[in-house]
Length: 371
Image 1 (spheres, rainbow, N blue to C red):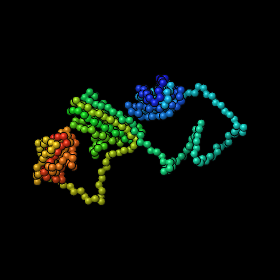
Image 2: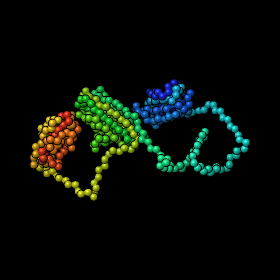
Image 3: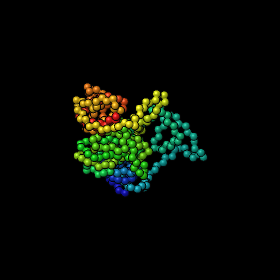
């Protein structure tokens, strides 16, 4: 247990690297004049406002720092401890003024019905069986609380299994954004949730596509964001599961939100719709790799027309974007199929036609055909 005394200037948030499980304010020369933010792993997990002498807090998982902000210049004395402490009032002054009429306690309590607004001052009002009437005139506010973004940068000097961990008590969704930059020849980040005993891999839905990732490779990757539903899990993390090799780096940003923003897509079959036509590939079909094609900003032909071709696959193996087109004159801006670096397109509807490609900055197309 440690006692601290400090002057906090008005309007200046003061961070203190103090670890503990219980926080209590003993004295304040300005009364209830401070705001206290409890911090865990660099993120604010709890916040209380307008508190003063006698205030006591015991966060569920403790804290490794506090940020104190005073509304006016305030001399504060407070205690931080890893255990719990009890409050004792050593001196109390009570003044009772009796009215002219005697007060007699009856054998049973009075039944009181309250209509209108009740203002309670200097007493404690206890209510049971209280209903909430959410009318248009007096709506009940619903607040989407979220934490401030936590930003870290990992590179070849970052140790394997370094993790960006988010405490999720009171939060339903965590947003992770990963922005690789520079040259990275090896490196991967895994998404995992904690069930109180084990860290478990989780499929993280991307915010910019229908893809999900349990492990995200940093090699040749660009900026992506993931929206993870984490209700019921006390923690979630992004872990450097493969060390970074190369001169580049990866910026990792996390935000926790109380809104239940579930972005996973549920796929089903509507029985009222006509059946899906399925074309089976004959067993005699033979896949073969084709020499990579350098795709320029002016456009090139990927494959000449071939009636015997049953399908083909094209992968963007370069650093620029790759647009697959059905005409040689189609510009990049007008293309319907655009592949990010590392993405693959599988063509089965019209593989026998002639196909072309164009890039925004230049890239390479790896090809495989099925005949």
